[in-house]
Length: 499
Ligand SMILES: Cc1cc2nc3c(=O)[nH]c(=O)nc-3n(C[C@H](O)[C@H](O)[C@H](O)COP(=O)(O)OP(=O)(O)OC[C@H]3O[C@@H](n4cnc5c(N)ncnc54)[C@H](O)[C@@H]3O)c2cc1C
Image (cartoon, rainbow, N blue to C red; front, side):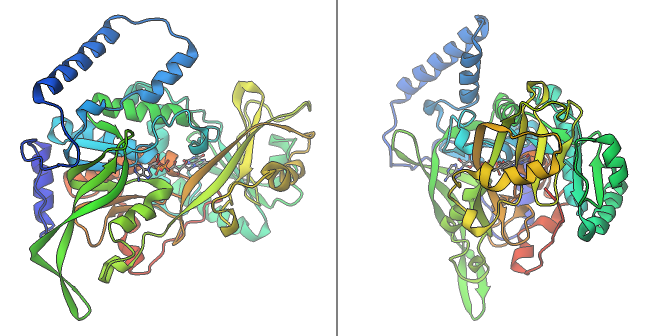
C-alpha cells in the first residue's frame, strides 16, 4: 500500500519518474561475478538456520561479548547484498538509521530500504562516536528546532517501547548562562520555548546562587533552566536501537562505501540554465566498494544523503557544487573536530547528582556523569577554521580547564580520565539542518548539517524524511524552511542556540 503512495508522490513531482524496483531479473551489474543461484540459496538457508539456532539457544554472555555483538546487529550478510532498492540511505549512524527505522516502520514490505555505511562496526569506534555527551535540550529560538527537540525527548523517554532498548534518558535539565549582552535574547528565547511547550525558566544570579552554591555567578546576568525534557541519553544505545529495530522491520544495512553515482538521462525533461538548455540527468545507481574490495552497484528509486560530515564530498559526486545552473550551489557542510573530556576530581562538595548540564557564556559545557561521580566537559564552539580537522594536543589544558576552574568554585584541579574526539557536520551557511528534497534532483533527499545536534534531532529528522517520501509532505512538524532551496535563494535562517 505504501509503495503506491510513493509512486503517487513521485508522479506528482511531474518531471522525472523513477520506476520502483521490485525484480532482480533485470540486474545488469557485471562488475562482480555472482554465485550460482543454487549455491546462493544454500548460503541463505544456512544463514537462516544460524539465526534460528541463535534464537533458540540463548546463552549468558559476558558484557564484552554483548557489546561486540551489538556492533554487528542488523548488518546484512554479504550474500544478501541488495542490487536494487526503493530507497537508498547513505550513512548509517543516528540520522541514516532513524530514516531507515521510520521508513520501514511505516511502509514495512511496501519499500525495500537499503542503508550503506562504510564504518561498521561503529559503536566501538571512539574516533567517530560522541558517546559521553548525548545532550538533549530545547533551548532554541526557531520553533522547528524546539519542536524537533521536544519530539526527541518524547522518543528517548519511550525508547524501550519504540526500539526495544532503553537509551536511559536522564532528565536532569540544562542550564544556559548569559552575560549582560545576551540576557535579553535568553529571556526572549525562553518565552518562545514555553509557547511551544518546552518548559524553561529564567533564573537571576541570586536564585542561581541558592540553587547551585558551587557556581560562580559574578559575571552572569541570567540563567535559563530547561526542566523535565532537558537532559542526556546513551547515544550508543540509541544508535544500536535504531539500527536493530529498523533491521527487524526489514531494512538492509550494508557495509560498503559509496564511491560514485551513475546517472540516467531523461530526454523528455529539459532543464534551462541561463541561455543553455540541458537534458535532465537523474541519479540512478550508487557505485559502492565492499569491504573485500569489490565494486558493485545499487540501483535505487530514491536516495537519501545522511552522511554527516562527509555529505558535501558525496554531494559533489552527484555534481552538486560542480554542475551547471542550480547544481553550481554546493552543499555547505564542513567537517569540524570536537573533543569531550571525562574528568575526575578529588575535591569535596562538587556538583551532585541533580546537577543540570551547564552551558557557559564562553561555550563551556559541563555535566556530572551520574553515579560514576565523574564529570564531562568540553567546548561547544569548536568551529574555528583552524580547528577543522586536526584535534589539538592538550585540548583540555589549553582550552577547557581555565573556564571550568573559573565557573566551578569547588573544583580542584581535575584529572582527565579519557578524551573523546569526534567530527560533526557543520552547516557553514546558517548552522541549521538541511532537510528535504534537493532542488534539482527529484529523487534525492538531504538530511544533514545539524551542527552538533544530530543525535537529539535524529528521531524527528527520520520521521520527517519518511513523511516526505511516503506521504509527499510534512505531516507532523513543518520543516519546509529547512529545505535546500533556502541555500539557492540565499535566505539563511539563524537560530541562537548556546549549545
Ligand atoms: C564532541 C561532540 C559532542 C556532540 N554532542 C552531541 C550532543 O550532545 N547531542 C547531539 O544531539 N549531538 C551531539 N553531537 C553531534 C552529533 O554527533 C552529530 O550531529 C550526529 O552524529 C550526526 O549524525 P549523522 O548520522 O547525520 O552523521 P554521522 O554521525 O557523521 O554519520 C554519518 C555516517 O555516514 C557514513 N559515511 C560517510 N561517507 C560515507 C560513504 N561514502 N559511504 C558510506 N557511508 C559513509 C559515516 O561513516 C558515518 O557513519 C556531538 C558531536 C561531537 C563531535
